[in-house]
Amino acid sequence: MTELRQRAVREDAAPEDKRTEQRERRELESEAKLDGETASDSESRAEPAPPPTSIDDTPEVLNRALSNLSSRWKNWWVRGILTLAMIAFFFIIIYLGPMVLMMIVMCVQIKCFHEIITIGYNVYHSYDLPWFRTLSWYFLLCVNYFFYGETVTDYFFTLVQREEPLRILSKYHRFISFTLYLTGFCMFVLSLVKKHYRLQFYMFGWTHVTLLIVVTQSHLVIHNLFEGMIWFIVPISCVICNDIMAYMFGFFFGRTPLIKLSPKKTWEGFIGGFFATVVFGLLLSYVMSGYRCFVCPVEYNNDTNSFTVDCEPSDLFRLQEYNIPGVIQSVVGWKTVRMYPFQIHSIALSTFASLIGPFGGFFASGFKRAFKIKDFANTIPGHGGIMDRFDCQYLMATFVNVYIASFIRGPNPSKLIQQFLTLRPDQQLHIFNTLRSHLTDKGILNSALEDE
Image (cartoon, rainbow, N blue to C red):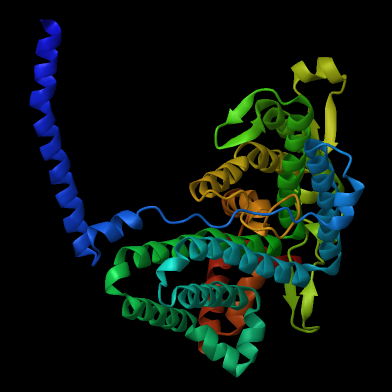
């Protein structure tokens, strides 16, 4: 009896379910018509085809040399050899100086942008979206013109004021940048096609998010470089160290999965990488803090028309004596320790690189899983694309820039003097009289005259 009653309830519910399904289908059809598509087009295009999967591009020499190893150990050796090659290349570009470093950052930025935009193009290329790639690269040009124009005006102020064309470009820089962007915006609106409205706006957002992630943060990398090469090298090295040590600890001791987005990541690798990175950051900071070429801000010398990194190191890079807490004294047997103040800041940098930095990699892993790809590209065998190596670096660059602005950077007298010298004589005289009155009221100017 109960079974018959349940069957009757299901039969009564069936028409209602059918009506609900028909109503949802009508809503989908009306939505598709608004976009200029039929219901069948909407259904066939609901799930775009994934981009082609990556192939094995390991050099033939390595393939032959490692042919007798299992795939696990083969991948370990390939990654290790190419990691050492990349570290050696990193040392070379550091030796070549700040200008080469800035050019490398620019090249890396363009390659990362290309990899991300190519994924979008591979996913949606069958739709023949008009001007998609052209507009993407045009917006990259516009954003780079804006950011690098700001950098040139800020750090090459005297040179810009000395050359008339540069001075005009500097004066109207933001207006020119806005005009360029507005041109691209109008081109996008004119490119809208009735059957592709939604996808075109998807790709418009895709391009702008890519610009935000790649261009903005690579610009911050260059700003960190101008603060002193140590602010560029130590953060990047900490991320590299954490990546290597987390892989090593995970490879040999990993047992406990860390996050579903990256099944190969383990808690053992995450924790081992953290402690190794903190120790590495302390040691690297100690070594680099003793060299002026690393700790001095990168400045442009107008007399020689070249970059200089010579200065009197600040207190941040001078050895100081610190008292060790009593609890630790009983363990190490020391009462005081001599270290550079920058080493204390390096603990914050290495902690961020090892605990928060990997989330940039997790974000990239989620992105790749969303589009069913293994790597962003096949640029580096065993590592993937350039973006696969720099997913954590961009997040680190933002943190370093914010950290410097919050805890390190103070007023820059040289920049104030440069701006002062470009003022009209009457403006300079007004500032001079104001400053003299202020120093006199403070009693500083009178005492200085008496000493003379």
